[in-house]
Image (cartoon, rainbow, N blue to C red; front, side, top):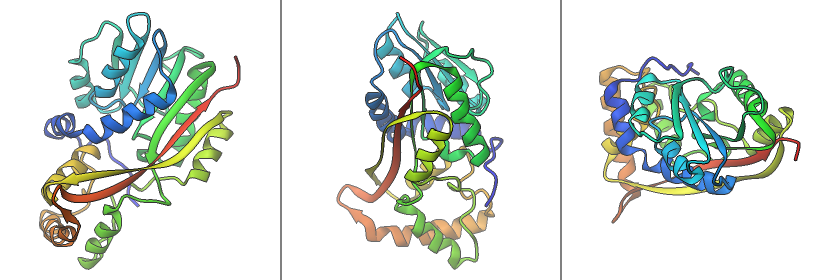
Length: 267
């Protein structure tokens, strides 16, 4: 297992993510709906990326509310800052350190496709910090990769990597099970409202589209342990394997995310 690096992002990857993050944006809107975000609320988006979902939430809460969007990747925060809204603020920040925010200062905190990039200690600190900055009765919501139901691409990729004598490092090493998510939340004092695995179906034109999305979504970590020649071998082998999943709409892949909604004790 490798440590996820925050230093591999590039302007090209950040722009590619902005253009190709429809999947994250669309399931993020489902998360916001499940949280019941409403007009006038103060909301914190942790791991906001290029700010697409934060801008959407800013429209929901309206001028009476506000959204703060933070992300540890400065290049992506720069793009988020271009989504100018009077009630949207952006800053570089990390999930496990919300010391810039006062205790009890938000109605809602959410992390959309963020938690699986944090190791165990970071996850615990991130959830504890979310609990601290939420008001009594405030809500936390997140979507995160499922370990018991991994992305359909993962076993195919492991097979291909094994064929060239490599392990699946630099992908998604920090996924959780539903039971682990429940334990994580309850240890931080949250009351769990809902916890489920949701399945999404994506279609891609070819292997290059899949690899481009994986690279930008992982801010350069996907297959980063491979040499250029090894990456070429993986790309060619994946292309052959994925053809078996081609439909008239493109290469069909299922992915699974844990959706969790919880609240703090209080009113």
